[in-house]
Amino acid sequence: MLSEPRSGRLAAWGNALLAGLVSPDDAVLAIVGPDAVHRVEGLPGESAPVGLTLALGRLRALGVSGLRVALPAPGHPLGLSGPPEFNARALEAEEAVVCHGAALGLVPEVYEAGPAGDVHAEVVWHCLPVREAPPADVPSLGEAERELAEALRDATTVLSRLDVAGSGPVAEAAVEAYRARAERGREMLAPGYPPRAVRVLELAQRVGLLVSLAYENGHGGAVSASEMGARVAALRPVERTGRRAQVAAYNAYVEERER
Image (cartoon, rainbow, N blue to C red; front, side):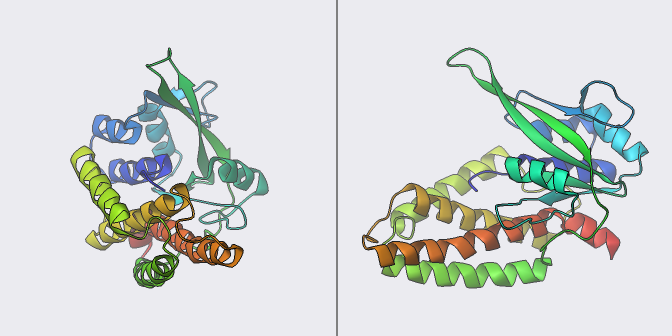
């Protein structure tokens, strides 16, 4: 995953707003990011889509005290707790936000609008009922950090042996360029998150970038069927570990409050 998921921005800055650590204007600006506008549809008590400021205030009034992230993939309902209708919608979007304190969840739908050469993204968050149950397969921050270190080491060894694109100096340069752009363009997570969550998210996004580079830049030296199979086998668990770590980082605020 090359960029911060929209669900991550909504959860992180929504949590900061719910905690009173940022203003509504600052939270909404950070959540919208490079998109043109975000609206929330299906919010209890509202018959039409509303803006983020009103939506976050309404969620607080409904009892929401925190926001969690889900980053599901086929066969891996990461961060979800049901029901099936919500899970299916989240799987299609590959992300969702699950409310803590009220049985509601938010799934983004992205639309492109504008003339050629000036296309922008508009996002509608669909508010749906969720099952109040522990989220699936979310590790603690400590577990996520250990898993990331092991997965990155093992995958780098395998990918380098297979001469796979994404494991050499070109990939490292791309990672550093991406990190420099990210540091200039945004604050990692939001006020109120523990430093360890920031560290885990940074490493998870770096791992996700390496995996994406390896997939996007072709097979490298992995030309035989067995080598290509080994490449996929090496990347799949690393990608899974990176997603688990991202969810653990974004959800750290709620987990800290629960403890």
